[in-house]
Length: 594
Ligand SMILES: Cc1cc2nc3c(=O)[nH]c(=O)nc-3n(C[C@H](O)[C@H](O)[C@H](O)COP(=O)(O)OP(=O)(O)OC[C@H]3O[C@@H](n4cnc5c(N)ncnc54)[C@H](O)[C@@H]3O)c2cc1C
Image (cartoon, rainbow, N blue to C red; front, side, top):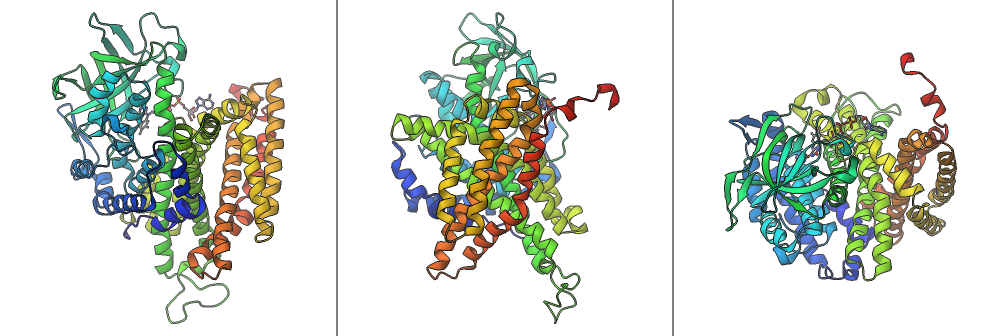
């Protein structure tokens, strides 16, 4: 397998040239001190850690997997040591509140680092990823005492976190969960129940783990309105912060699974474990959503990371692998055959990967810019608008980037032919690893319902309308330089609005129309957003080329934008027609007829 390189060139192009993160950081309140030198140092440092520490244990972690020995999970060789280096280098609390020992950097920087690490080793990055989610929930909803006691050690990397929602009978429908929380006389709670599929639920990185557990109080109403959130340490935390007695939490099994073998996926039994309420009683879903929204962006980044890693391998292979001659005559006349990169359909697969990876990166960066503005924007109206845009783009980022990521890794495998199917090249691992991203943190179906139902119809398309305005403005800006992009982008902006109105009207007649249209609507939205971001990237690159910069990187940008509009955007039309086809053909068939 070829070496892995952190995609710093494209990251920097997008960060500085397309989205102007320097001005963006300068506009934030309380996060304005990030300059280019600092950001470059962070990106370089993360890249070195990823390439030197994480990539070498990606394959071995997959082959070894985690083991459950005497009730304790042992991670694959090198995982614990990589965690120690990660913590010692100060990565564990980079976006955390400085009051509790964090470094106070904006969310976007945390996401850039997550991207770099996930691309090199998705399974390992699950552990800090879950901790990051726990930090967000505690930061937003914990008391000051809870933050001192739990958040500060999480940021120092002395503890890791988990997110315990799923039970055997409660997956997408979290409201069905049965784990109980009974008040103790001292103000704590006794937590009893079984959670399944808990990532980083047990491991050997550190002595103690903070489980964030959803459970029901005795008087709780049914459904999601009756769920509360609790902090449940694996071992009782003593007054001096050290790990004390075991706390009624047992890892009874490790799931055997298709991919991310280095990530421990645990069955956790809670038996009268001591827990502490976070936030208000029965408000657990609200608190958990703080964690889940960040986690959704993180999972989108995982899809992107797998696709980037696979694309690098496929590109290198396609340049070297000699098979058959080009249809238009030899391109490597001195060799026995031409490299497969000359064949049009291999180029289609490579360009599809490039278009999805770099376009997806742009979507992710724009979305996280909204997350920064929603919290640290200069005034209330900036914060509110950014929050609405973040809400709107989060399900698209999560679901489209994971769907696109999985498609992309499959193209990479196909570029390798039979050599991709065998384990030696490592690409099949990326196919297996990336598959879960379409399922956890709300499957594609759940994201699609969220997008169309809550984020578009319920808000009467507020953020969508703003986004359509940006598409129109970019189409105008492209009109002279890139007319072949400008016109379809303008039409797309009109069409997306009309599609939404039509589906919204039919949903008023029959709510099943939302469920019937939702995934096609989400995929349409994904292609439409990528069209907008490809136009923006092409504009910047075109300006550089016009100014005399002959860097092939910029040629690649413009060519890929043209490829996206010519060869990939037509998929949006198929999704549009399917979304408009209505629920009838889905619901007409009686169950017995399947
Ligand atoms: C490796 C791994 C790690 C995980 N990590 C965690 C973790 O750390 N913490 C945690 O709490 N959970 C975790 N999970 C659980 C994960 O979030 C759930 O698997 C996921 O939410 C789906 O739930 P389910 O598997 O029960 O599927 P179900 O909810 O039973 O869904 C089955 C299928 O039905 C579809 N579906 C369900 N409802 C609808 C609907 N209304 N409309 C359309 N389609 C629908 C789903 O999309 C899916 O395709 C993990 C799972 C795995 C496999």
